[in-house]
Image (cartoon, rainbow, N blue to C red; front, side):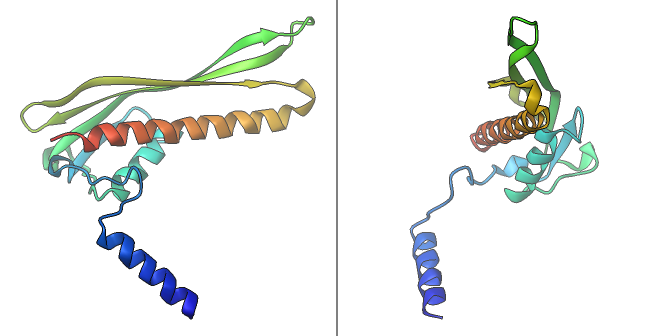
Amino acid sequence: MLRACLAGAGLLALSACAFRLAGSDPLPGVLARPYLSLKDPYTDFSREFEHQLKSAGATLQAVRANSTASIEVTKDLVEQRTLSVSATNIPTEYELTYTITFTVQGADKELLAPQTISLAKDYSFEENVLLAKEHEADILRQQMARDLVSIVMRRLTSLK
């Protein structure tokens, strides 16, 4: 009981001094009711971006005409390329690159010109632990998607 009271008092004190978690800046009013156009709604980036917009207080609109602004993701691409191979021509290292391009259009003007953001990470590959390395690639891709969403959200919160 005492711990709960102390925790509550701590939260109250943090909120009283206007403390906010990093990346939790409020969206500008023009993005209160955005229309979200995604190239593919099932990618890691798309799902995380939609979730973060809703968490930031945006009410996504199903019809562009009802929106205050339109956010269009025109590129959402993950590429993998081989960085190195063994003497027996088996890949030993890969690079994952996650690239997105988005733009924000207001009711009467472009709020944010097309922005392309790209992140790359490399990982080693061992054929005898194939499943583990595939899982590692999935985790890297998901983390890059979260990082890209954070960058996009920071750019959106800077809009006036």
